[in-house]
Length: 240
Image 1 (cartoon, one colour):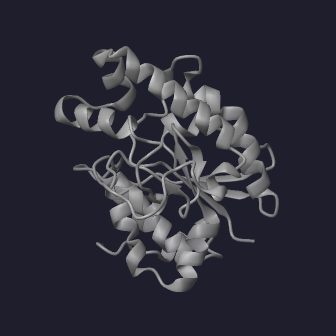
Image 2 (image 1 turned 30 degrees about the vertical axis):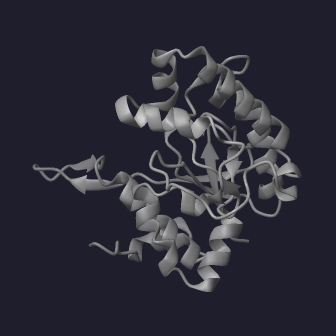
């Protein structure tokens, strides 16, 4: 059975939308995490109404013009048009995932296997419709506290259902998002660390290209559903 792939959202998000507002559709209201998502949206609204610019900047991770855009986006979460999550997130990881270039089989694999962690939504599938928004998983909201802690039990239980027929997880989450779930003891958890030779030939962790490498790795995994860690010995990154 193909493994589950966990990835973070991106700070960069596409503007606009082509679908009905979040929360207005039967699919959104019927989602197991809907009630908690509604609480998070309301708590975010409570914070915004305080007008505390320092607190808002900390929760959103931006300042200046980007903070103004974030406040505007978050103030209209219930009324703005939506896009599938895989189209809404357009940061480096998602650019290198190159979804438009994936074949139909790989797209089906992407939809079934990839799950995206989010401070506001908990965890979303690639096809779920979400509006533009801004919120860090490490942020704290009134009445909820730190989001990674607040989401942990529900996200873990939700993913347990998704893991039922499989026991392998490719965990490509940074620490901030990884803190929002607890993998069950039976899980075969695979992580990826990208290394490059340093000036003296020693292997050093790659920082600048980390997100790009993760995006290309996800594209490889959804295009090769049966891939195991040892199969990466023959994997060549598209950019060499």
